[in-house]
Image (tube, rainbow, N blue to C red; front, side, top):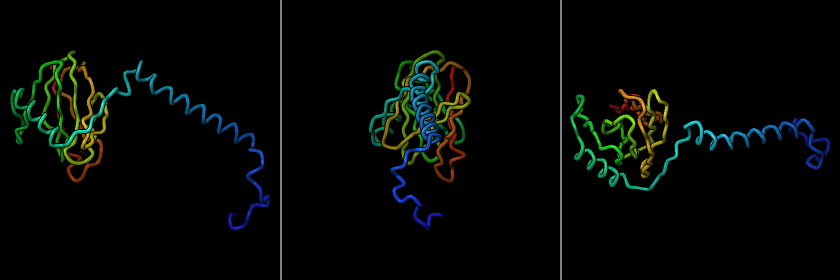
Length: 178
Ligand code: CUA
């Protein structure tokens, strides 16, 4: 009972129980294994994406995205007339996350590499590509860039996987791969 002091008043000088040493050692070794698995998965499993992040203001990021849309827009879609953009392979592609949409719709070519940039205009959002299961946090004030090469053609959905308010469940986007 904690309201009474331990019988052995100098309890911290007693040797550690062998079972405890054993379990702490096992847990520590497992931590090391998991730690080493992270670079291992990155090298061999195509997991743990290599990304770079730069500070940027939402205004500057939006200007870059709008410039790309103005240059490479091919059509509009839906009742909100969301632009569909077909940027040239190898180029920088900008995707905006904001309350509550992914903007614009991207149309990419299969087997070509792009540098995909992600940033938020307001709160924290989560870029979750379906059904490939790529997940990246999208922060305001940071330009998160990753090199991507689409390998499956078709229509891919982007859902938001960080709760961002009343419209979170409706925050859907699209990437076409041709
Ligand atoms: Cu954006 Cu949830």
